[in-house]
Length: 86
Image (cartoon, rainbow, N blue to C red):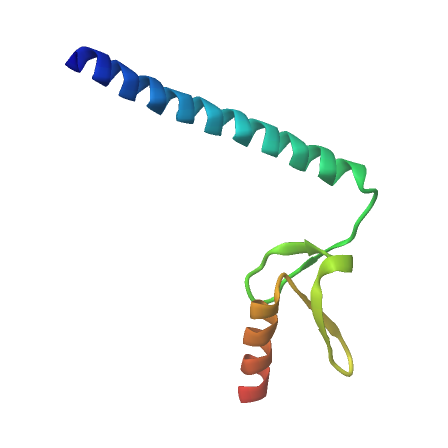
């Protein structure tokens, strides 16, 4: 009886491992298709974290002489605090 229980537990573990691996494979394939099918999109680098983001979807701050682009609102807020304290 205990062998049957151990076998069932191992099968359940294998099921979840295979399911996650398949999901990860298809998610990566979708990212490749999505990145290649959108046409040319200019990437800009976030000055806080260094991440590259598409320019059209990025958060930004316009100064008198330059526009700074950010990956998210949190990086933009960090930059604003750093600039205002300087």
